[in-house]
Amino acid sequence: MKGKREDYITWDEYFMGVAKLSGMRSKDPNSQVGACIVSKTNKILSMGYNGFPMGCSDDEFPWAREGDPMETKYLYVTHSELNAILNYRGGSLEGAKLYVSLFPCNECAKAIIQAGIETIIYEVDKYPDSPAVKASKKMLDAAGVRYYQYNHTHRDILIHV
Image (cartoon, rainbow, N blue to C red; front, side, top):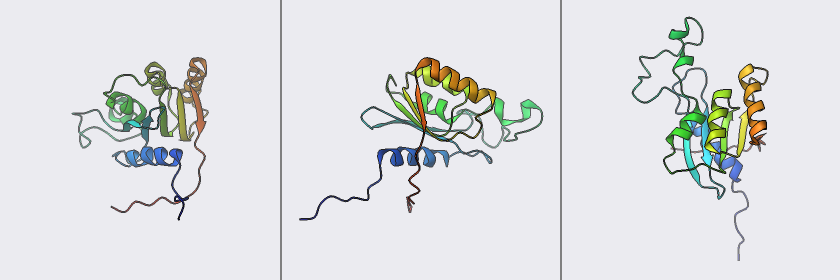
């Protein structure tokens, strides 16, 4: 009798993979960030990626990173974490985990804390010295939200569609 398969992916690989796959939906030419919110029992509750709010055309709003603030993306884009929180329609996110490809900014940290998410697993902390990330960590620490960096297995996970 043959035993179970041994090369299956871990929960962390699975959920970070879903977060990264979600990020691939972003139309942003510079940053594709994805998020996946998971219950304590490892059920996917919601997903999100960075992009404009519903009804705001990806072709009409700006994607620029520099220039007049009204002509850059920053005043218009909804981050992946906030999108995932807002996309959830099932009630409370109390005790959930958030997998995200980029460490959350201060604005997303506020929403994460208020939603009751307990743990953040992030892939990259690209801007650790920025005021937004410093403020985020200060608030997350004060609120008791645990966060840690995803431990890469460097395994190739291929999906052919």
